[in-house]
Length: 132
Image (cartoon, rainbow, N blue to C red; front, side, top):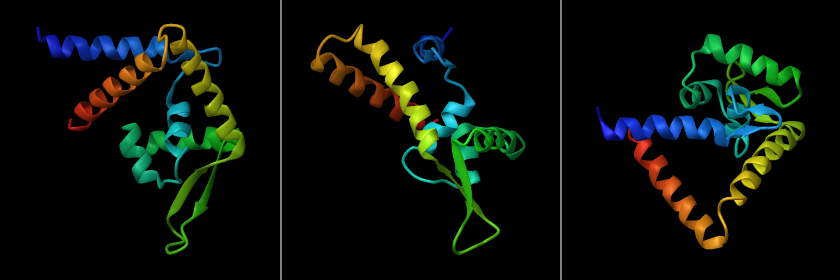
Protein backbone atom coordinates (compact mmCIF):
# COMPACT_ATOMS: atom_id res chain seq x y z
CA UNK A 1 0.00 0.00 0.00
CA UNK A 2 1.11 3.50 -0.74
CA UNK A 3 1.56 5.81 2.22
CA UNK A 4 0.79 8.82 0.00
CA UNK A 5 -2.50 7.33 -1.20
CA UNK A 6 -3.42 6.50 2.40
CA UNK A 7 -2.79 10.10 3.47
CA UNK A 8 -4.84 11.49 0.56
CA UNK A 9 -7.82 9.34 1.55
CA UNK A 10 -7.35 10.30 5.22
CA UNK A 11 -7.38 13.95 4.14
CA UNK A 12 -10.56 13.44 2.13
CA UNK A 13 -12.34 11.77 5.04
CA UNK A 14 -11.15 14.42 7.50
CA UNK A 15 -12.29 17.21 5.20
CA UNK A 16 -15.80 15.77 5.08
CA UNK A 17 -16.01 15.98 8.86
CA UNK A 18 -14.35 19.40 8.95
CA UNK A 19 -16.84 20.86 6.47
CA UNK A 20 -19.94 19.45 8.14
CA UNK A 21 -22.02 22.39 9.36
CA UNK A 22 -25.40 23.03 10.96
CA UNK A 23 -26.72 23.46 7.40
CA UNK A 24 -25.46 20.02 6.43
CA UNK A 25 -22.43 18.66 4.67
CA UNK A 26 -20.53 20.89 2.26
CA UNK A 27 -21.75 19.34 -0.98
CA UNK A 28 -21.96 20.17 -4.66
CA UNK A 29 -24.32 23.15 -4.21
CA UNK A 30 -21.96 24.71 -1.71
CA UNK A 31 -18.98 23.93 -3.94
CA UNK A 32 -20.69 25.71 -6.84
CA UNK A 33 -21.38 28.77 -4.70
CA UNK A 34 -17.81 28.73 -3.38
CA UNK A 35 -16.40 28.75 -6.92
CA UNK A 36 -18.60 31.71 -7.86
CA UNK A 37 -17.56 33.80 -4.82
CA UNK A 38 -14.76 35.64 -6.60
CA UNK A 39 -15.93 35.91 -10.19
CA UNK A 40 -18.77 34.88 -12.51
CA UNK A 41 -17.91 31.77 -14.50
CA UNK A 42 -19.15 29.94 -17.59
CA UNK A 43 -20.49 26.40 -17.28
CA UNK A 44 -17.37 24.84 -18.86
CA UNK A 45 -15.09 26.18 -16.10
CA UNK A 46 -17.53 25.07 -13.41
CA UNK A 47 -17.78 21.59 -14.91
CA UNK A 48 -13.99 21.31 -14.93
CA UNK A 49 -13.56 22.54 -11.35
CA UNK A 50 -16.45 20.47 -9.97
CA UNK A 51 -15.49 17.47 -12.09
CA UNK A 52 -19.04 17.01 -13.35
CA UNK A 53 -20.65 16.62 -16.76
CA UNK A 54 -23.10 19.11 -18.22
CA UNK A 55 -25.94 16.71 -17.45
CA UNK A 56 -25.00 17.00 -13.75
CA UNK A 57 -24.25 20.73 -13.70
CA UNK A 58 -27.59 21.71 -15.23
CA UNK A 59 -29.84 20.37 -12.42
CA UNK A 60 -27.35 21.56 -9.80
CA UNK A 61 -27.39 25.09 -11.24
CA UNK A 62 -31.18 24.96 -11.54
CA UNK A 63 -31.50 24.20 -7.80
CA UNK A 64 -29.24 27.15 -7.00
CA UNK A 65 -31.14 29.40 -9.43
CA UNK A 66 -34.47 28.42 -7.85
CA UNK A 67 -33.07 29.10 -4.37
CA UNK A 68 -32.03 32.58 -5.53
CA UNK A 69 -28.35 31.90 -4.84
CA UNK A 70 -27.10 32.38 -8.41
CA UNK A 71 -28.13 34.07 -11.65
CA UNK A 72 -27.28 33.24 -15.22
CA UNK A 73 -26.67 35.89 -17.81
CA UNK A 74 -25.79 35.73 -21.49
CA UNK A 75 -22.24 36.76 -22.37
CA UNK A 76 -21.97 40.20 -23.97
CA UNK A 77 -19.88 39.01 -26.93
CA UNK A 78 -21.77 35.75 -27.60
CA UNK A 79 -25.45 35.68 -26.61
CA UNK A 80 -25.50 31.87 -26.96
CA UNK A 81 -22.96 31.50 -24.14
CA UNK A 82 -23.88 32.17 -20.54
CA UNK A 83 -22.22 32.94 -17.25
CA UNK A 84 -23.28 32.06 -13.72
CA UNK A 85 -22.93 34.67 -10.97
CA UNK A 86 -23.45 34.63 -7.22
CA UNK A 87 -26.31 36.70 -5.83
CA UNK A 88 -26.26 38.55 -2.51
CA UNK A 89 -28.44 35.77 -1.06
CA UNK A 90 -25.98 33.15 -2.32
CA UNK A 91 -23.04 35.10 -0.92
CA UNK A 92 -24.72 35.32 2.50
CA UNK A 93 -25.42 31.57 2.43
CA UNK A 94 -21.87 30.51 1.52
CA UNK A 95 -20.28 33.10 3.83
CA UNK A 96 -22.34 31.68 6.70
CA UNK A 97 -21.07 28.18 5.98
CA UNK A 98 -17.47 29.38 5.71
CA UNK A 99 -17.84 31.24 9.02
CA UNK A 100 -19.00 28.01 10.69
CA UNK A 101 -16.00 26.14 9.32
CA UNK A 102 -13.62 28.90 10.49
CA UNK A 103 -15.21 28.79 13.94
CA UNK A 104 -14.71 25.04 14.09
CA UNK A 105 -11.00 25.45 13.34
CA UNK A 106 -10.61 28.27 15.85
CA UNK A 107 -11.26 25.71 18.59
CA UNK A 108 -8.13 23.73 17.66
CA UNK A 109 -5.85 26.42 16.23
CA UNK A 110 -4.85 28.65 19.09
CA UNK A 111 -3.22 31.81 17.89
CA UNK A 112 -2.32 33.49 14.64
CA UNK A 113 0.93 31.57 14.16
CA UNK A 114 -0.84 28.20 14.19
CA UNK A 115 -3.45 29.50 11.77
CA UNK A 116 -0.78 30.91 9.47
CA UNK A 117 1.09 27.60 9.52
CA UNK A 118 -2.10 25.62 8.83
CA UNK A 119 -3.00 27.89 5.90
CA UNK A 120 0.52 27.56 4.44
CA UNK A 121 0.41 23.77 4.78
CA UNK A 122 -3.00 23.60 3.11
CA UNK A 123 -1.81 25.86 0.28
CA UNK A 124 1.12 23.49 -0.27
CA UNK A 125 -1.22 20.48 -0.34
CA UNK A 126 -3.57 22.25 -2.79
CA UNK A 127 -0.66 23.13 -5.06
CA UNK A 128 0.57 19.53 -5.01
CA UNK A 129 -2.88 18.16 -5.81
CA UNK A 130 -3.38 20.70 -8.61
CA UNK A 131 -0.74 18.87 -10.65
CA UNK A 132 -2.93 15.79 -10.89
